[in-house]
Image (tube, rainbow, N blue to C red; front, side):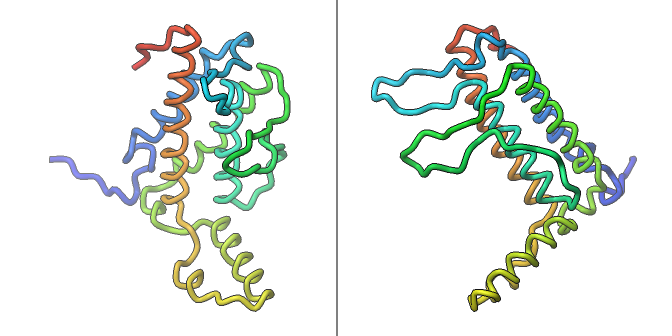
Length: 192
């Protein structure tokens, strides 16, 4: 019987579905043609929905946010989404061509890769970026005279919490994107 030291395995090998799910998003995104980039479902009540392009922009924004939270390097990145408008207002996104949207999505995927290639033993640990963000939040609270005991007890975020948030968030938006593509007539029924 072969045994593995899981702490030394790469995260993407120990939890193989992480890379598979991120790559599946790329595969689904490949069906968003230039003609479909601005397509969005219409609801009888007039509710707002992201367009297909905006779904991909939002996925990219969250990937880049996670990368920025985990690390301390600066990435030249301009968010696609404007400031969050609140629950009852439509989101705004800056414009971009089909190739710009697809290139940004691909680039964000590449920036996530080194984090999922880290040793499995690092999954429950904070990163330099999460420690820096935690310390910054504590300093801001102290400056305002606010109680920091809960944040201090919680500690900085971990690599695992960031990666699992990313996956859960992306799985939802990928599913919506695939459903929207089907509604628009794209042949995405069987991709597995």
